[in-house]
Each structure stands twice: as C-alpha cells, then as structure tokens.
Image 1 (cartoon, rainbow, N blue to C red):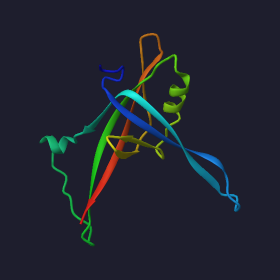
Image 2 (image 1 turned 45 degrees about the vertical axis):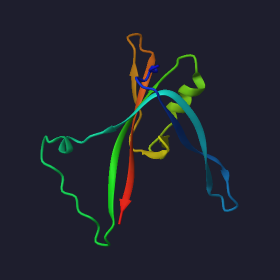
Image 3 (image 1 turned 180 degrees about the vertical axis):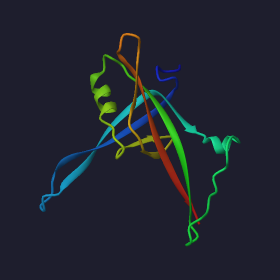
Length: 135
C-alpha cells in the first residue's frame, strides 16, 4: 500500500537537540529519533547526468581520494491528527539526518512545506546528500 507521501519507504528522522551542558559549560547534543512510514525516498539525478547541459568535470583530490556525492529527496506525509510526528518533522534542520535503506543522509536544506486547498499542511519534502569515498 502506498502511503500519503507517495511511497512505502520507512525513514528514520534524527534530530539533534541540546540535552544539557558538560562540566565546561558547552552544550551537549543528543539525538531524537522518529520513525515515519509511508514516505518516498528517491535519488535526484542532476541535469548533467541526464545529458542536458554541460557535464560537470570531476577530479579526485591530490591525495588520491575521490568523493562521490548523491542527492536525495524525501517526501514525508503529514497526519493532521499526529501532532508529535508533525512537530518532529518541522523541527528538522540542516544539521540533522535521515536514515533509509540502512544508510544515513545529511539534510542539506530547509524543509519544503506543501498545503492542501484549505491551507492545512499535507506533506513536506527534504533534500539530503550521501557521500561515499573510493581510494
């Protein structure tokens, strides 16, 4: 069954919030974990990779390590009767992460909100990236 977000992927939202202070007065960050079913998590393919426009030149670092970055978009349905889930989704920032398919993706942008004709929030989309290295 396809969920309200247009998919049947389950994503785990990892939001880092201040949980207290250490002995030196520095803020301690702890994760808040929220599991959301019915999402759609998919790779974004840049225009250059689809053949339109000029292809971007990629060069490995001088030390011989190449980094591949993949961009992903996640659509998360909003249930108006689940305010805890809605608050968890809306609290996400670019310092938080998403886990899906056993991998972790760093959120890289603001949350994009979509409303219905009555102005009620119905879904959000989040852009994230995953980097992998090869020697």
